[in-house]
Amino acid sequence: MGQPEEREGGAAAHSELPPGQRLQRGWPVTHYGPVPKFRPERWEFRVFGATADGEKQCWNHEEFTALPYTSVVGDLHCVTKFSMLGSEWGGIPARTVLELAPPAPAVTHVMVWAEYGFSSNLRLADFASERTIFATHKDGEPLTAEHGFPLRLVVPHLYAWKGPKWVRGVEYMTADRRGFWEERGYHNVGDPWKEQRYSYQEEPGDGPEL
Image (cartoon, rainbow, N blue to C red):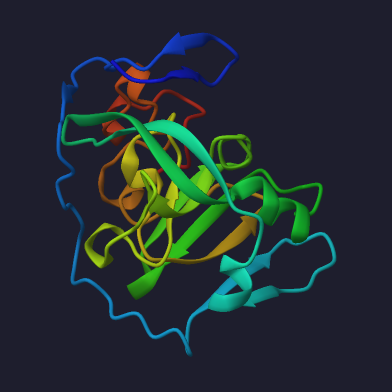
């Protein structure tokens, strides 16, 4: 199957298919809207919102990609029901961003912002997972534009829409707010092991009212 991985909650498990998923050998291209053109001289990664010092932190492309590089092995589960198991994702851990630009104590969620104003919300605990990564590479190769170059977020324990392509920044929030797909009927949490695909499946406390 895939490489052994640590599921959220501390339960060790081998890579496997969550309920309702099918194994995907290739990597289909799925996204909403056009592929943005990368302009390195204009590219900037921002951390803003409820930061610990109240200030915005910014990196240009050269500065951000110079941050310590690591890799994690993790699956990618698409809400359209395909799963890729045991991929190696290389890039900058989300925890590095949290360390360099700490959130205020009251922060509970983040909004990850991408090109064209696309967004996805995450619980702070999900964002802070040791396996959440701002990926620049997959299986040792740079991402292609269609798959999110220069930067995409990968959150292996959630459905893939929670990890946007073409990421440009993170907003720290002291209350939850739905992102692009979450406002359009997708589940606010997105745990594939619980098949949290759509908002009608939400339980009390899973997210703000639509």
